[in-house]
Amino acid sequence: MRISLWLITFLLLFTLTVAPGSSVAGKDAAHFDALKRFSQVLDMVEGYYVNPITKQELIEDSIKGMLEQLDPHSAYLTPEDFKDVQESTSGQFSGIGIEISMENGRLICVSPIEDTPAYKAGLKAGDIILEIDGEPTQDMSLMDAVKMIRGPKGSTVHLTILHEGAQMPKEVPIVRGTIPIVSVKTRIFDNDYLYVRLTRFNENTTEELRDEIRKFKKKHELKGIILDLRNNPGGLLGQAVSVADTFIEEGLIVYIQGKDKAQRKDFFAGKNKDEVMAPMVVLINSGSASASEIVAGALQDHNRALLVGERSFGKGSVQTVIPLADGSGIKLTTALYYTPSGRSIQATGIEPDLAIPFVEPAKDDEMDEMRRRFTVREKDLGGHLENVNGDKVKANRESRDIKKLLEKDNQLRISLELVKNLPRIGKIK
Image (tube, one colour):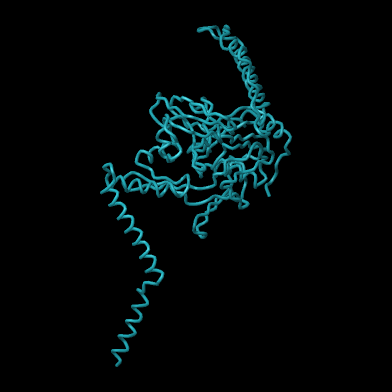
């Protein structure tokens, strides 16, 4: 009797443990059914599809499709793609110098990188890329588009572009070149104001930025900084944090939050010898994305800078590149990032404090342009003698260049006036 009672108890417990209705068993069964269905489809396609195709190709395409269905930024990386991703944040690579994304099924230009073939060809943030070498981009994956646009230096890619506000698309031939990763450019305004243009965030951006500021301070009094993040497509998260830390004394810069709320990661400003506390204006536009938005959002939330320009792109997601054993990898969206005040800028962007649209400068008369191009002066002749007052001439030329720059850029012109009149910023609240 005691044995029978023990046996009944054991059977009851066993039944409760492995019952089909239990959550664990139910999940396992669902996973098994899904894998079984996938295997069946795989076998049917391999066996009956009209063209020969291997199981390896089918599995790789399945992985691609799975990741591309998640969001515009998750992707499968072949070994070649994985290498390209690593090269794009250090050294240099061949291509046209453009950051692209998918938006509502359309391939768009997030931003051309300054001084690259794409930039010189006139591509702009917000341009829709309709075709690449005559092939429609409608059903093209992001990684396939990247592959088609990149190529050997000296070769040409033909992009069919629809500019924002244009009625008709136009074909733009672009000769691929070597894309140098030069991320920091500076100009000096009125002797004491430093203009800093960040073209992207790569491995050396913070070091280059701080080095330029140190050089400036050796010869000038730093009365103000204009930080230009327009058409900066982003880059490395760590560099965005350290760039912001250059201008923020203490406090939260950004935090990232994934699926697990317990795994929130905060990034703080810390004391460093390169801190800059001069008045600041930051320029942003629709081509300012990702890491640019982290910097702009942090400076805005800390009341550290005045933001001028147009609403930023709105890429508030974090991608993690995960290597796989065969040399390939996946780029997976693992978190969203938030500004210090808790704002998610995903799909909304950063709103400037002063919304000032960029006004295209009036185009020169065609005849004036032709006259300038074909007018030859002494300085244009090979082997001409240099002016004895070379340094003074050079300074005058730089002054004229700056004047032209300000005349053509209303946002920059207004920012310079603003930074001159901003009160000196004391301790940040």
